[in-house]
Amino acid sequence: MKKLALLVALLLPVSVYALDSKPIIVEELTKTTKSWDGSELPSYKKGQPEITILRITVQPNVELPWHTHPIINAGIMVKGKLTVITKSGEKHELVAGDTIVEVTGKIHRGINNGNEPAEIIVFYAGIVKTPLTIKVE
Image (cartoon, rainbow, N blue to C red):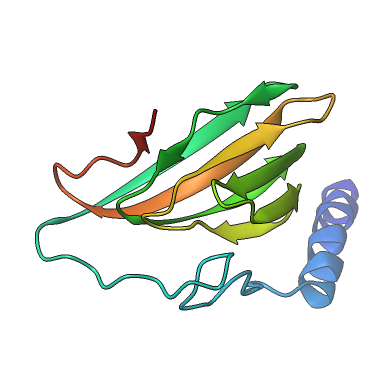
């Protein structure tokens, strides 16, 4: 009898959880044909596709160097704040939970003006032997 009571006690929370939860939740975070500044994304180039996923952490009060991306990339802010600014002065502010479809072929940089590290996960959809980033002097 004690074993049956223990089994019921162990299975009851699982049964209640299974009734109240959805087994799969899909939430579309971003779907677009444009980067954050409104520019149309370029066509994919021919060649062997290569996907790269990076976790990038920018420490407080750090300005990344001016750079450009020759391939399409998108990210999601995990924590902190980050300002992305183009050489022409367009700005995009990001906080944890925000997504971004980065500008392609346009000079820009990220700036962390916050008091904590800014962490972003970035997904690059490139072609083998194509650099992810090109620094601009």
